[in-house]
Amino acid sequence: MYKLDQSKTPFFDKIKAYGMSHTTPLDVPGHKLGAIQNEFREFLGSNVFRLDANAPRGLDNLAKRKGVIKEAQALAADAFGADHAYFLINGTSQGIITMIMSACKAKEKIIIPRNVHKSAINGLILSGAMPIFMKPHIDSELGIANGINISELKETIEENPDAKAVFVINPTYFGVTSNLKEIVKLAHEHDMLVLVDEAHGAHFGFSEYLPISAMEAGADMSAFSVHKTVGSLTQSSMLLVKGERVNVNLVQSTLNILQSTSPSSLLMASLDTTRSYMALNGPEKLKELIALAKYARGRINRIKGLQAITKDYVWSHRGYDYDETKIMVKVSDLGITGFDAYNILSSESNIQMELAETHLILAVLSIGTTKEDLDRFIEGLKNLKKHKKDETIKHKIRFTYPETYARPREAYHAPKRFIKFEDALNEVAAENIMVYPPGIPLVIPGEIINQDILDDLDFYREQGSTILSDTEGDYVKVVDKDNWIKYEGDL
Ligand SMILES: Cc1ncc(COP(=O)(O)O)c(C=O)c1O
Image 1 (spheres, rainbow, N blue to C red):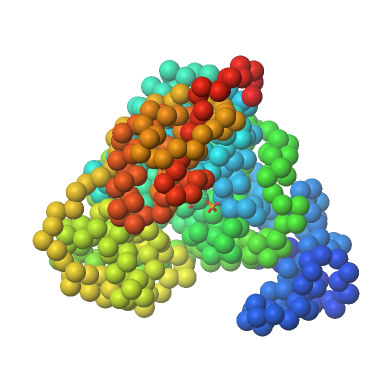
Image 2: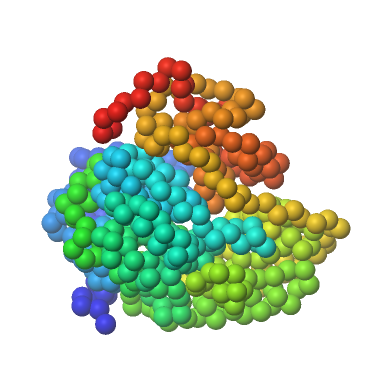
């Protein structure tokens, strides 16, 4: 099935041999392969430090791959069904920004769903691209945003035939996908690239029981968090490229702009070994995991007042496909919010959920999840009944998005003022304001702050969600329109 020998881990082998070689380290990093004694070193032991070398001879260079990194990346491309694979040491965020910057120049259009991650907005700022937002499907029972509609995409493409790319999320944070094959077909017919945020779908290519992966669907690029669902160290991700439409020289130059010149060898070794393990064992392990998730879903659905979301539910709510390794549980019929359940599970059952929304909580499983973990989860969920209230949880999700006044990059460069949220009505945002998780922007630079946004901010604050913005406290950064001389060039 694979062209290359997937049992090989060339980068890991080489860095391990170096770490054990008793070389005298007169280079950086300063911990000298673990020679400095401190609490951290004591806790971790020496092996982590032995593998944390910078760029010793023979270890290749991530910015200009010729040796073991090139070999390791070729194995990754083979395993993930791509033509080229790039190790990312700054997460999928780095991959998403690279995809947008290599597909769009300033003022060029990109068609993009509104429920994108912050990194996509940062990609718009850095590239200068003009977003053409599409509304995702809204599941009003669960209060979440899902995939996009093919007929709406068709219309958007027809209205914007000059767009350079279509950006797709496969899957959303909640595990729902759109009809990616159809999206790719449509975009390619109109000479547009398909860029896929696969942050939560790195495992897709390894199982026939999961939604289709971006590469299988024929997309041009995909960035995915190997660390999120497959098991490498946090921050380690990959970018994949397939086909002839992408300028791979530009991709490499963009990656080099965005990444450290001291890439972590620990992260790269972790990617190398995780890829090999998944290529050899992924299909079987994922099959077991899906069966385990099904078992848990069945038991959760027997607890009165709780609903574990199934594929049938997703299909009946306009979703195209669903990643069954995620367990979404609707808790609001107990009269408590997902935020309440998240806190109760943590404080009373020592369970850390991935995220909470008004109606639900989300568990992200991986091949590292055990039956014991899920049994504890089920017990924790049963315990929620103690907190049942006689309340109706009100649904809250926005259906409208703010109007655009300027491109994100223009707003980013415009003169700014800091004002209180309560005074921000009708001002032009100069920063992202988002709720985390799931990291979806309420407003992005260049958009007009309307009453819906101010109401949402109040709502999420009351729920105790983390509101992320660049500005401290109750202040927001807005464009100082009175002193703004708009630059008309190609900025
Ligand atoms: C949908 C989505 N895209 C992209 C990212 C960014 O991934 P990373 O954390 O690997 O940079 C995230 C992270 O939460 C995400 O949820």
